[in-house]
Image 1: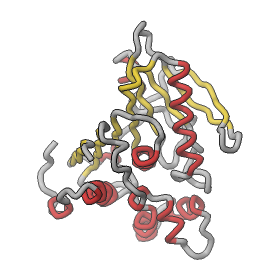
Image 2: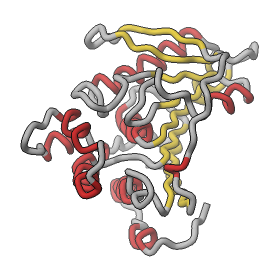
Image 3: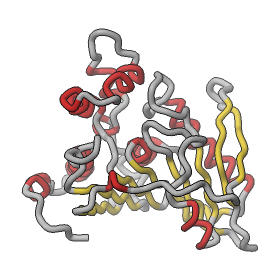
Length: 261
């Protein structure tokens, strides 16, 4: 497998990313899910160019929806005169149809379908980017989206709900009940259901992403000053290296060496 992997380590926590106001030029529309008829809202910005341009698909964070989150990179995409879409894919991650379910993956793919039909998109330049829960969904799309995606960019992502639940229990934060609600757990946390929603435990497609680039960005303070530990990124990175018989870099990151990118 020839896909490119990049792990960027920053001393400023990725959890410090701020959200700007939603730009006025973003338009709102909706589509119906082919799986259950659910109405998915999304925001979009069409390129003003007369020729096909790249498409950037931004995925909202864990506790947000397309309506509540403003979109981190819409302004930068607009400045490049590219196409942009910001789908809802089941909104806040606090119910079973969210959390990288089949419904989530279908929603993301169908939002891309809409963009391909209604925008002038360069089909060789489709990019998916997400932060926190959006990074979690980016990992899921990397492994299971049916589209040919050129690049994936995951910022302080979640890869393992089982481990994250334990980490959130230790911190006694608001994500503990939300994770349980996502996987349909009641009094007893169901490890197998958590793993079924965790990209860390999914199969890596051997050839599907050979022409794709996956970028993983995390801060060395993440997990100390934010809710998602850097280990969530490291372990997924190592999973992909192991799946392709490459050498892992876990030891280097555990020693928190200087950033190399």
